[in-house]
Image 1 (cartoon, rainbow, N blue to C red):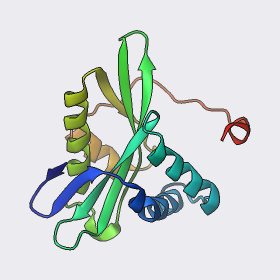
Image 2: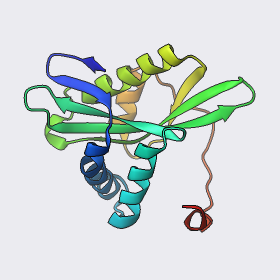
Image 3: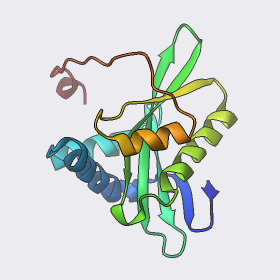
Length: 163
């Protein structure tokens, strides 16, 4: 857990479920204009909170009142080329009132500290909407560079059979 003057950052707990669901709903609306299914999302967030083998959430709290004000999710990608893990930064959300106040910086610092203490992490990756230039500036300021890779995807329905 890390702190700065007004922000406490920690790994999310099961009691953070509702905040994480609300943040994901808001992020999907803001960044992609999507309305996510709350039931599916709640199951997905809950599953990760109960199964750290797949990743974890980090939350930022307002130090004065313990209000959860931001979060991000880390998932893992094994790199056979590096014999190590990339940590993917996903589901980043900071409440509008707290944006541009160092909340993401604190969240990302906690992730980097955790990675350094766990060893076996070779880097951090994230994807960002092409139009979200403010977020891109933030990521650059924190030491991230634009990758030369493009991202492709294809959806499938296999996941509903597994969980």
